[in-house]
Image 1: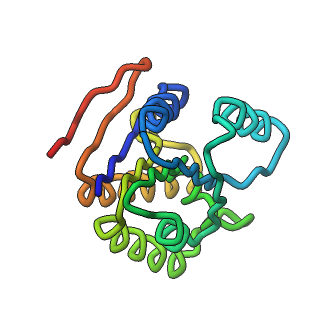
Image 2: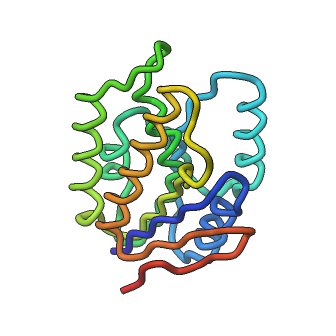
Length: 175
C-alpha cells in the first residue's frame, strides 16, 4: 500500500504530475472526482481535466463520503487518484459560507483512519492556498485554515508527500 499527497498552488502542475504517476501504473486506475460544478467557468475546468484522462480509467464521484468511496474502490493492484481535497472540503461549506463542522470533523476522521489501511496505491491531490495575503472575508480565511490543517493531517498519514511548483515536483517526504 502506498499513499501519496501531491500538493501545489493553482495551475502548478499537481494534477498533471499525479496523472503521470497514474499513467505509469500497471494495474487498474480509478479517478475519484470530488468537485461539485456550480458554474460554467468551473465546468470548463472540469472538462479540461476529463479530456486528459484515458477512457480506460474508471471514474467514481465522491460527495462528502470520500473515505467510503476510497474503501469501496481500493484493491491491491489498483491506483486511486483523488482530485482534489480542496474541492472535497468545499462540499462542507453551505451557501451561507459556514462550515458544517460536525460533518467535516467526522468525515475527516474517517478519511484519516481509512488511508493507512487501504490496499493498493492512493494519490491525493490538494491545493496550497495559504501562501498569499490573508483573505479579506471570513469564509475564505476559514477555508484556507481548514485546508491547511487537512493537508497537514493527510501528510502525516501518507508515506509520500510531493509539492509541485512550476510543473516540477519537490519531494517533501518519502519512506
